[in-house]
Every structure is written in structure tokens, then in C-alpha cells.
Length: 369
Image (cartoon, rainbow, N blue to C red; front, side, top):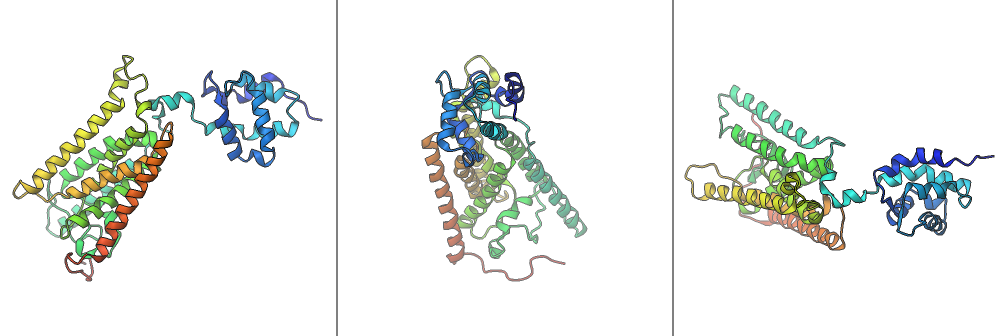
């Protein structure tokens, strides 16, 4: 014979689950959806679950608070097997529901769970590759300086006459033309990538960074048919595009209490963020254009790789990055932007395969002994 748990026992057990949602409680609609996704309707009929939740919502405000939930669970209306099933999966269901306070406040989503590991990992990888090639070239009598030293023989470098080695469209990000190029990209991506990872987590930032690198090399291959490419600028600019995408889809949440006197909230508000990223991208691109076309003797800069990376970060970021409170138009915009990115990628791939103006294909061994 089972013994019905007391109110205090139920409160002690379920309080941690409800606490993060505060006094306003858990939205009834969200809880219903999560319980269904956790498989509760496999053992409790959907109509019966709806009835239980309606009874629990005693004040009719479409939210369930701890007290209401405990009264439902300890009442005679709930059968023993229902009590066990609901109690067994409730924690997982509530954990997947974003609290209302976090839906309104974008800053509440900054946390180190998990820590931002991707930007640190890729930065270390770029440093290690740079040092390895610098030492190798040193042994060959070639010095790596502030603005020179990219190993032109490397299988990682994007070269227009070796486009059949498809990995080069991504691995070029690991090579840099001198230590100033490396350091500037490291500063750039860490300053932009770490805060992005704190909110959106490493796997989203990883995808955007790599897809930005790919879009950068594809755009470069279409516009600069005979110029090799190195550096992580495509990924760095993808991070700018991702920030702008996050601003677009979380505009209201980023402006939460931004005019209440907090300087931090004001500086992190959507208009300020957008201004900073637009100034940063336009300013840096303008300098790159000037150096490319008007500064004699300057190293050629892959401007189209910068632009391609930023557009990729924007287009992929809208559907991929965390949207605190997704609206219908934002979801539609996400699908449209994803289709545009895929069409761009498809066009570049066909262009690379069909255009005849590239340098003659080099089929020799890529790397000297």
C-alpha cells in the first residue's frame, strides 16, 4: 500500500525546480509541451494531462506555482501511477523551460556553463601552427617577420591552382602572414568570440566560425581568381555578423532596463552594440580597401573573404544563435537567411567548377621534402 507524500515533502523535493522561475511560476503552455516531449503522454493520455494541469492552475493565470503544483500532487484527484510519472520527469521538463526573467533580460544568459572552450582552442591551434611553420622555415633559412612568413608550400594554404584539395577552403585559417597578422586576428576573435560563447555556447560559435571561414574562401575564390589566401579573418568577421544577427533577433531583450541608470546595461543595449559592430566592420573594411587598391607595396588583403565571412555570420547566425524569445517573423527570417547562405555556397561551388579563368591546375606534390 502506497503512502501519499506530505505537502512539506513535496515542497522540499520540487522547490529547486520552481525557484528559478520566481514567484510568477512556470508557464502552463511551456510545461505542457515539455512534459509531452519528455514522453509523459505515452503513459498518461493527453486529455488527462490537460485536465490535471488545468486543475493545478487554480487561479487561472496560465502559470503553475510551487504551491499549486504541490496541492495537485498531494490531492486525491491524482492517481498514484500519475504522481510517480509526473514527479519522475518534471525536473527535466522544467529545466528546458527558459524563465520569464531570462526571456526579458538578455544579460541574464551570460554564464560559464559550459565555459567558452572553442575560441580558446582555435586560438591555441593557430598559435601552434604558426610556431611550427616559423621554426620549419627558419631551418630552411627563411625568417618569419611581422608581415612575412606564410609557408606557400603548406597543404593548409588556399591556392587557386589547387582548388581540388577542398580542405584548403577551411584550413587556410590556421596560417598567417607574419606575427602581426596572427596577433590582430587572435585579439579580434577572442574579444568577439568569448562573449558570444558565454551566451550561445561553443557548438553554435564553432559552426558560425567555420562556415564563415568557408564563405570567406568561397567569396575570395570567385572574386580573386589568382590570389592565394591565409588567415582567420573570414572567421573573425563571421563573429561580427553573428553579433549583428543576435542583436536583430534579441533587440527587445537586449534593451531590458537599459535606461534605468545602469551604465553596464546601457553599454550592452542593442543600439550601442549595433553601432559598435557597424563602425568596427565598416572601418576595418575601409582600411583593407585602401591598403589593397591605393597603398603601393602593401600585402594584398582578401577583402571579399572579410565580407563573405561577415555575411555568413549574419545569415547563419539568425537561425542558429540562441533567440531568447523567438517571434514568428524571426523564425521566418531565419529560414530565408539560411536559404540565401545555401544558395550562395552552391553558386560559389558551381563557379569554381565551371569558370575557366583560374590558373592552370597544379597536380604536383604540394609539399617539399
